[in-house]
Length: 368
Image (cartoon, rainbow, N blue to C red):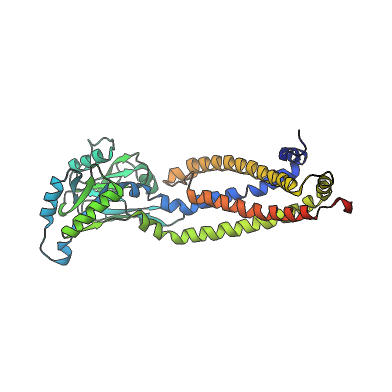
């Protein structure tokens, strides 16, 4: 093997390099921390997906006591080939969920005035389920929300249910008649009190920004108001979490950088003779530096690969054994967690490379 190969030094100094890898693998903790910080935001993924296709619209005249033009609004929707609607029902209840950070979130629930309306919603979203058991007073939950709330098929809930995450407004209460495998947290209720001042507005062949733009145009024309929580609003509510995570990344990076440089300064000091010999036989400082950087990058790459494998196994076991049974989960990937690892590695390696540059500049065969 070429002695100038970065792999040659690693093979000749396995114990030291393994120790360096273990220190660099601490960045995996940063990754898991990023997933933990972003876990509450991830619970809104289904809400974000729903908001891409449907928005609830209210007749604002019942609030400002002006003349209603809601019927005219509905008439225009019926003529619009890009939109469809379902009359919403009076709110039957509120269902929140616990997060891995031990606080609750909520807001993803829909109430329908009939089973037929709920079936139409399912068709709009391509949801397949057995609706034969559904009736007024039926509660349909996603599997994750059911596990989170510790509810099972056939369970009955009402105003006296002793669960702080559940608030029932429907006089007759609800029965959990269906649990669906839709990923995320959502509750669907069927009650016998349909509303005539509120609809769910669906985009047939438009979605996202195009749907919102179309609804905004209708808001300017009619006395209506939308109940819509945008992605930006959700992310804004968790901005402080991101700042805290950024501070933790920088702090841990500094600690890792100091630890690595302290632990390995002696090891690299012993290589002064090696560097001086390289200089004596005519090898440029730039080439020596490239060798050192290649060694460090290869070591870091191996550490990242090992850390990634260990983290993936840990997340899989932790999700399946600990979190999923309680209706919780950590994502396997999030851009913020990935960025945290990259920043941590850069901040850890940069001082190590910088000190090696200074060391090589001082290398002189005449000193030996």
